[in-house]
Length: 166
Ligand SMILES: Cc1cc2nc3c(=O)[nH]c(=O)nc-3n(C[C@H](O)[C@H](O)[C@H](O)COP(=O)(O)O)c2cc1C
Image (tube, rainbow, N blue to C red):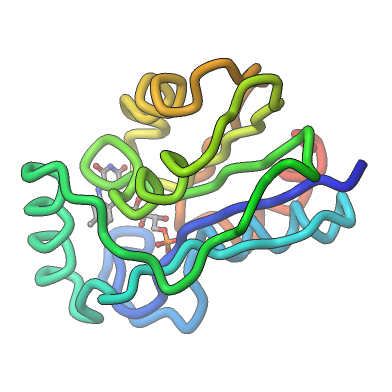
């Protein structure tokens, strides 16, 4: 059976090794594409209808507000079903210690029982934070394998680590 890689990622201005920089491709997207290529898996990007600001400082405030208010941002599109997949890779950036709220919007649509989930995160120091607890709550009934945490500024040198994990 084919595997699926689902990810959330944001390009634009972000911290990269301690300084703010504009990136044309998000960190998590780079890892997601590596995983999909290595496994020959399908790839799906979770995108918000109203994206967060390109400017980093505005973005972190918007994301903090959504977290505080437990918002479920509307998505550009979704998958009709995940029935065709037993193994699903789920990747996201650490946002305020957990997953971006749009990832909750996506995950809450499906029945995860019996699925195997391989989680991965990119971050700037706090690894998965509490996102694994949240992921396990949302995807009740799924089996989780050991996740992969990669610092955002090291994604361009992470190929060997990703291959080893996959
Ligand atoms: C809104 C927001 C909140 C963040 N919160 C955290 C955090 O709590 N802990 C952390 O280690 N990194 C945090 N970061 C850094 C991101 O997790 C990191 O830069 C990640 O690689 C971004 O992935 P992306 O380029 O795929 O969006 C945050 C970044 C943003 C934009």
